[in-house]
Image (cartoon, rainbow, N blue to C red; front, side, top):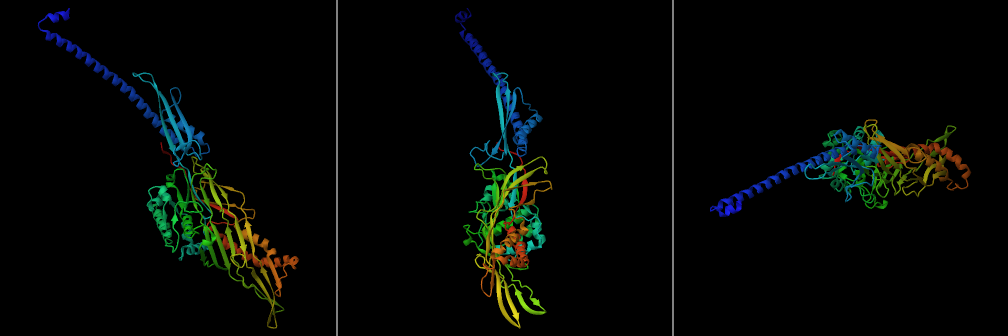
Length: 589
């Protein structure tokens, strides 16, 4: 009726306006309804984002707490408990509509997928928190989750054979002689200098900065001269506040004529370097420290190594020892030792991840001739017995398979005293030889017998020594050495017997004296009667042992510490644990 009335009314435009107003109200209503729905939806979406942020915060904190326990004896079980307790402390209680899941694994940047559950040691924890969040206006509830991965590397640094806890006067003299030979210059470090330097530590991050590298990978790939490395080590010590040892080390920062460059990262025996880094993430080693004394000796040997690892191409280093009874020492560095920095555990092929090795060195010690006093009978000189032409080099060679020290595990506990590192030590095989020359082919004229009758000297005969050796000083079984922080520091040295013979002090003496009867050469009037006089040689041996034992003991006193300074040991294997750093947890994903 109204529509018909409007058609009949002369003012039809007024009716059309009323219809347009009615449509506008509908549009406005639709707009406001949309705004209301959007506002209510925004509340739901905002609630989801808020819940996800809370879940992420919980996961982050739980992962950081858990990874701190991954390296303890409790392992993954303790880490899982730590994650749950941390989440609860931050107001997240699992159960009902919420849950927390912990996965222990290994973070390895050398793989395309950094986090995985295989490999050892475990160094990462991944925590996933989940919550059912209801939608108040937009529909049913939905599952919201957040994941965090935390990583921490427990790093130990150690060397095999090169560390000396207490340096005495003789060792200091040997060190000066050895360094002088290696560096082709005169070195004069006092006992106090060497003892102080043996306690100095260099942070790898400071060394990285001093050498101009931006990452640990860059540091490992850096190649410098010996002098440049020493200057960088001095700078690193200064950065750590150790100006005293920086000044001591500055004394040996010299250019070596003809010396080879030094690569910081070790490439194995064929391409030796200063550091063997056993880490999935090399940058984690930035806070680790190495001993300045060990690094000095290893670097000096790398600079004088054989380029191809063969004896023929190894330069002969003549050392004027300046020690009583010693004419000189000749050294050849076939393979230098290496310092190890890294994690425990094994690689996929079963080999240990972090290993230090001993040096492969030929060493000859030339002794000064010694004369026995004249034997008198009835107050008149009748028989003169002298040690003539005694020039007895002792050549000690460590075989191509050097000794090794492998980091099997690092246990980081809540206290320093309970934290420890276990290192498996396998000494290398050494062979010793006594002869009149370094090639172990010439006999030694020990005693020349002559009778003086009425002023006339009559040769009676000689007692000589055929070359002895090579005597194999075979290694014993692998020995575990445990280093902990019970003394307040992880900087310590420990030794293990490498064979059944005993310690350094009598290994060479015992073996050489045992081989003496079979090596004696008795030649009265120039006729070798050794074979004929075999039954009585034991008596001759009994007479000579008191004479030769001090000589062999002198070799023990000189050769053993000389080789120890160079990273080679005879009879024992000493590991110098330089530092142990329990990783600081960090979020990586």
